[in-house]
Image 1 (spheres, rainbow, N blue to C red):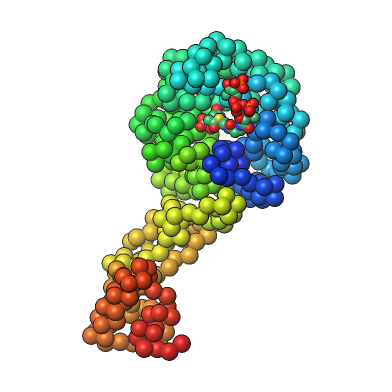
Image 2: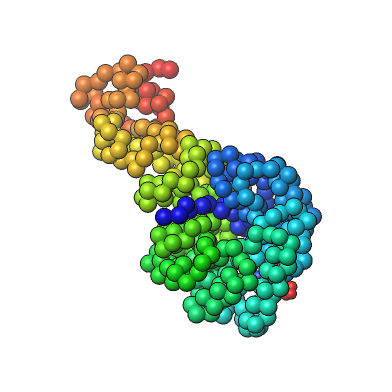
Amino acid sequence: MNQVVINDTTLRDGEQAAGVAFNLEEKIAIAKFLDAIGVPEIEIGIAAMGAAEQQAIATIVDLNLQAHLLGWNRAVISDIQASIACGLKRVHISIPVSAIQIGAKFQGNWQLVLQKLQDSLNFALDQGLFVSVGGEDSSRADEQFLLDTVLAAQEWGASRFRFCDTVGILDPFTTHDKVKKLVTSLSIPVEMHTHNDFGLATANALAGIKAGALSVNTTVNGLGERAGNAALEEVVMALKHLSKIDLGIDTRRLLEISQLVATASGYNLPPWKAIVGENTFAHESGIHAHGVMQNPHTYEPFAPEEIGQERRLVVGKHSGRHLLSNVLQQHGIILNSEETQSVLNAVRQESTQKKRSLTTQELLSLVGVKQ
Ligand SMILES: CC(=O)SCCNC(=O)CCNC(=O)[C@H](O)C(C)(C)COP(=O)(O)OP(=O)(O)OC[C@H]1O[C@@H](n2cnc3c(N)ncnc32)[C@H](O)[C@@H]1OP(=O)(O)O
Ligand SMILES: O=C(O)CCC(=O)C(=O)O
């Protein structure tokens, strides 16, 4: 299998999440971090948005990162001129490809859309740029029209095609079928761009890769339009552990970049967020904690250190004797069986009342230890 690459779009689709607006420092920090952990390509913004965005793009270009930097454009020559003015050498040109999108935006005039693509593509190629072409709403497009469009883009000189499940309506099986058809008919690589409206963005990205896609769009924390995109941390870890594809990303810093983007976006993650949520390596339930204390693999799919996280054993409503004794022993407290059960009952009561697990201090004061 050829090497699969990440093209992270936290700074473009990620920032399109309603209510998210990164400032220049945050954009620079995110771009540098993505580069530092080995993300090979970063979609850094939309120059057509105006002066502030152009300044941010140009500043990131000037950082001379290892990663390839890509700018997002409509099939509009002035958009591409704006990208060029920022110093970008790679541009992505997007056109709508489904009947519903072409109907709403171009009154159903698909010839006009193709003409705009050809004109803007020619313009970008004349400037010596690498050009990726995106099919907005590829998943709802007529399959023959989509294929004809992509074949035309390939013939006109596009270097890659982005298959977009713009409204996240695919499942992994349908994704695999659709992407396989494209991959077998094209000589340029296919890139996956999947949305999470039904919670399937990562699964669909993986299905596309299994079908032969060689590039995948991600965003840190899955940030993005509506329910978001395929999450960088999920795609990287699922490919590594489930598909045995190591992308060479420094996974030990995934938690750190997740926290950076969460802060910059102004949105905290739910504790159960896959890979980077604060509970992904926390064990409270008696049976789980007992198992983990014998062998962490009983209830952990990989070691927490692999993403820069730490394991936590937490005493709460669902805890059992083994966990409780273990925690108390760490504080020099050894109880007999009856005493342990009585503390456990008190833990259940207090935890239910407080609607959370207990801090060590709260546990110790239940046992009568003064701190
Ligand atoms: C699925 C996606 O995520 S696509 C990316 C979406 N991202 C964004 O929209 C964020 C950044 N966007 C912006 O800042 C603005 O929308 C701009 C600068 C691109 C355009 O702004 P405005 O000129 O004010 O237009 P507005 O956003 O209201 O409407 C979009 C226009 O682009 C046109 N358009 C939409 N998609 C495309 C396309 N792929 N190629 C060419 N034109 C397009 C629409 O038909 C409409 O054209 P019109 O002004 O001639 O009617
Ligand atoms: O890049 C494109 O072509 C469109 C990307 C996009 O954000 C989407 O379709 O959801």
